Amino acid sequence: MDERQALTSFAALSQETRLAIVRTLVVAGPDGLAAGFIAERMGVSPSNVSFHLKELERSGLITQRRESRSIVYSASYDALADLVKFLMEDCCAGHPMIREGVQRPDGCCKTDVARSEGDIVA
Image (cartoon, helix red, strand yellow):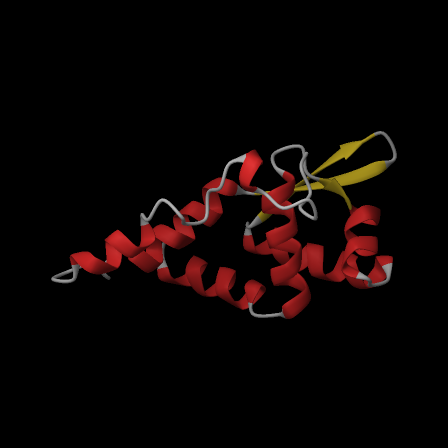
């Protein structure tokens, strides 16, 4: 990922609703969620969520596909991984403790058993 793409991604994520949408889609998995469900989950109007989804898609952090009459959005795991790699690229020079903190077993990738009941499971 180049710096320009990273800046576009960070700009898209720097808004509360958009960050919440991405986090929700990450949990939802590759099947994604319909735009209407996302709007309901975020507590915003369909036109408002549409604006945010467009910004996230433009940044490449999410993708969309049509399923019947619905537009379904999914997290772009490759783009999110590239963004994390961009952040971590130079961080560990001389500081191996940083990488150890990121790779802890209690980190981000919990199993289905460890998820709370409030999480969306696709």
